[in-house]
Image (cartoon, rainbow, N blue to C red):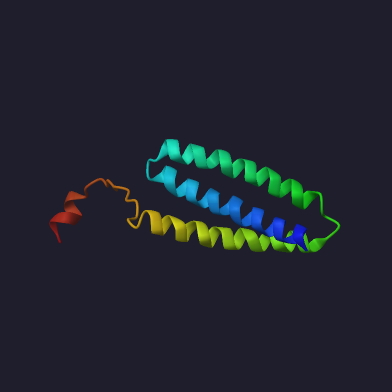
Length: 103
């Protein structure tokens, strides 16, 4: 039972950290994102090694997949809590003077 909980928890942690890292780096927090990525990579390697070592128990695969789903949700929720503003990207378009003049 404990091994199943470890599989699920590692997947939640790994994917949650990955989601948070992507969000942080997209906002320009490169250093913090790099630190989070080191922790996330370590967690991911341990999680995948744990699942591969237990392929004889399909429940580990199902629990890993469930952990990925929950980790994504929690990572996005944590990101929204930490940084409630959404990143913006300016869009520059070529001006169509004929079309713009008629409107």
